Length: 239
Image (tube, rainbow, N blue to C red; front, side):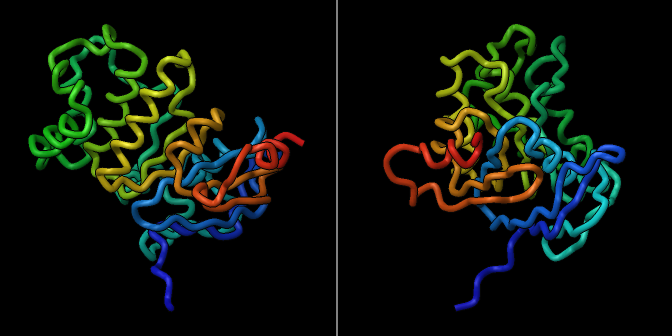
């Protein structure tokens, strides 16, 4: 039985900062509608992988294929327009602007065409943002600000959403809120690749996991196939 062509394919991807090689031949694929989490110790290449996919780091070798088109080495803005959108740990929001104005900035790449429909879709996914649409972002909780960052990314109609540690910097009480947020995106059909240090959150929301070590894929599989404790996963990551 033939398998569907992946939405995103990464083949023998290498990347470096100066002379220091970080990614050493990374291979994986993501199907449309999947949520995949990249796991690994600090320095394993997780964030570099996201930054290479989104164009902030130029690959030195290998392929990145989105819907059959090679995009490796394209400038950031061209990759963004093709549909790979990254939400960084910093979120990069405008704190003095309202929730609605921050969201509308995400539609600028499309010259705001259809922005009214898209913003209502965001409010449907995140009803709390609809309740706070006129509120300044700086007055929101950390979890709510993360919703704004994700909602703004959705306004650009991404094909693949890259999430760099969505729970980063948030107190433990917001971790469950982030899980609900990511699951809301899944229900809406969003394809996501996520870097997340919190293994509990990662396994709660992901369909599959990929483990990086020293810039290469060493393991991975379906989250649903995991049984019992995750000691073997932790050992693969940190030992």
